Amino acid sequence: ETGVTQTPRHLVMGMTNKKSLKCEQHLGHNAMYWYKQSAKKPLELMFVYNFKEQTENNSVPSRFSPECPNSSHLFLHLHTLQPEDSALYLCASSQDSYTEAFFGQGTRLTVV
Amino acid sequence: KQEVTQIPAALSVPEGENLVLNCSFTDSAIYNLQWFRQDPGKGLTSLLLIQSSQREQTSGRLNASLDKSSGRSTLYIAASQPGDSATYLCAVFSGSARQLTFGSGTQLTVLP
Image (cartoon, rainbow over all chains, first blue to last red; front, side, top):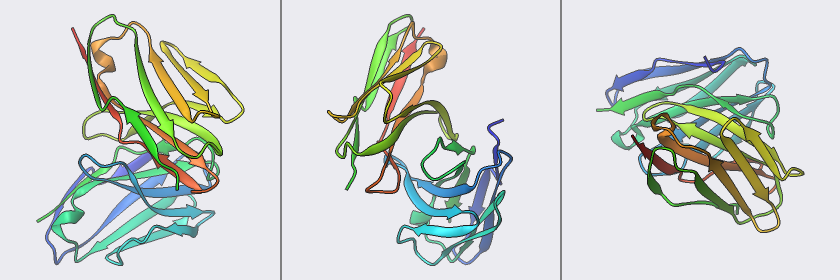
C-alpha cells in the first residue's frame, strides 16, 4: 500500500469512447501529478496540481482533461484518444512540489 | 533544460554481487534527487531521497550518493538478490525545470 491508489488498473477503450482515470491519495499531500510512461521512454509529466489549482500543463493534447475536486482526488478524463495514447498512466503526490514523490500502481491504458 | 542520463541501460549480475547504478544530470542547480524502483507493469516505489545539501543516504542494502557539482549520483546495492530485479529510475527536481526530470532507467536482472 503506497498511499496513492489508482483505478482502474487496466482499461481498454475505443477511439470514440469517453472514460476517466481516478487517483486518490491518503497522505495529506498538497500536490498531485499525472505522468505518462510509454515503452522505452522516460516518464513524461502531464499535469501538476498544487492545492487543487493546476500549475503545470506540459503541452498535453486537449483529449486529456484533468480534474482535481479536492486535494485528495485527481481525475484524468479521456475522450477520442488515439492508439499512440496507449501507455501506463501514473499518478503521484507529494507534500510540496519539490519534496519526495509517491506514486500509485498506474493504469495500463490500451486504445483500440 | 535539465537532462538525466542513466548508464547502463541494462545490467545482469549473479546473486550476491555488489553493484553500482549511475545517474548524471546536466543542470547542477537541483533541490533533490530521488531513486525509484519499478517492477514490470507497476508503479514506482520510492527508495531514497537525497537533498541537495546531502552527500548520501542509506536504507538497508541501498546507499545513494550525490555529487552535485559534477552532476552525478550513484545507487549502490550490496549483496544483490533475485528480488532486486527491477528497473531503477533516477529523478531530479531542479529550479529550472520546476518539476521532476526522470532518466530512462537501468533494468537490473539478478540471476540466482
